[in-house]
Length: 117
Image (cartoon, rainbow, N blue to C red; front, side, top):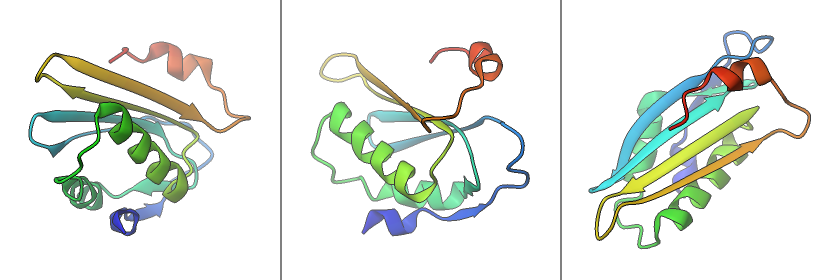
């Protein structure tokens, strides 16, 4: 199961909101940008790279990939807020952006400063 590849570490200070951004290429020609505000756990970057390598044979489109990633991250990390952007250039430029958050979390000052991908 690919979810088992997602390694986590305790957040250095769960009292504060902070943004984490990771980028990767789950398969040739597909770019991924992950932005999240952690809660109690943070994602270990090396494990995220190994996790993305597990998508090498994924045959779904960008929408299916974004939803699979979101589901896995929400189950393993339970971030306060998460945004995924999946992009492909071929056969046509195609971009999918998906966002989710915990029901009671809001930080308009932090989210308002984010440059939209």
